[in-house]
Length: 589
Image 1: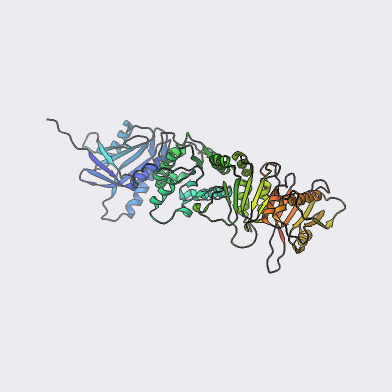
Image 2 (image 1 turned 90 degrees about the vertical axis):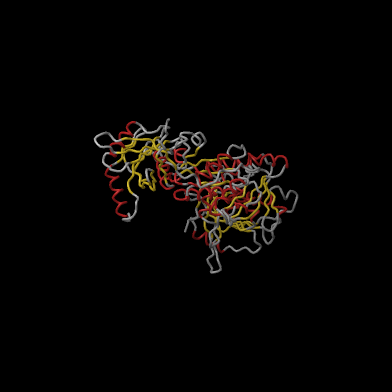
């Protein structure tokens, strides 16, 4: 009769398992290891904690630093209560390959066991295996070599329930973009992606703004299965410690990415050991415990250490959104729709149905646009022309509202030389159309010269005040002439005492900009300093004719206290690399 002896059981606490698995992921492709703390119950072991010990690491070996191990143990025993049964019970280390303990591993634990009266355990955590752990128990024996025997190992299952099947409608090609990240070292990057995406016109789902009340995992599951179009997975070194990303968000995102309507973008912020300006493309699979499979390594990853890394991802997501909306635009023959706000609502569910919904946050106080918002628009306005071309739309419809300088910049991003039909619906419901006014009565433009030099200065500048208010006030503009950078010519252009009728906006905007060009060409090709005071819709149309000009755009910063002045906000130069906004002049103060 043959008897089978029950294996000794080693049970790991959740914390011990997470320490081993996480430190293994961070050390790949090398081994790592440390010491185990816990207690015995009969012949079985309970591991309450695993300590990581520094040492010599290679891809095939790990030798711990004994001095460091003794220091960690001394700290533990110093803090332990006298009645606490927890103590040193063994060693652990990792194997990057799917193999169990080596002969050297067995020899090492036997050598340590010689110095201890009680049995010790060895745990080997093997990457990419269905069993994960291999356990051994080493016992000291009189006069002969310690004996090792295999042990059974268990650890707590994931605290998350198994994923259910994706519901119908889980992917929507023009839905929100989900941002997945580890808060401890990924929040700053997530903030910058969220801000840049909104400034580019994308709808963003973000945990701190869009996660409503209720159980976090349930709400998160709803967000991941109710119509996303894409996601940005931000991989940082600490993502190895994010159970929510590893166990919940990533599995869902990989499922969603199987649909052609979904776009998963990987923002790699894990530096290579030898060069911190380059990212480690193998690291995401390691840290998220996907290795040795190349799940993320075989997908497109973007190095966010590069200056344009984030913008590359945003561009991909914008073009993906437009590609998904293009069939509808074509079938309905509708215009490409852009909504812009400088004081936007911050929730994904508040976004409308526009092709692009551009939103930047305005400052809490003051009339001027936010410096940070302008810096974002400097990056994203250059994407607008490509997006419209990709849509195949024959017309552009702009709505919403923004500062007048932003209106001019928006128009400059959609120049008349490339896009013939554009209309602007303003907050009062009036439509300003680029082709309007043919055959209508266009107001006569009055030109008032306030400064005229006989010859150009070394850097020729002209100041132009376009004011379309019936009651013209030159005070702020005169202040600019007297205290500005120095001008060769300063003129005020107005329509007299007439209000501008949107029905003639197209012809009137062309006539106005013809006058501006005439002034700018008086001394060759002068830099234009433009202060505009008029309807928002007309401002967008005027901006469309700024091509070939270098224009510094101003905003009025006056208030009731008598501070009556114009300040430079941004420099526009459509058609050059990085345009139309080539410089943000407004300071952050």
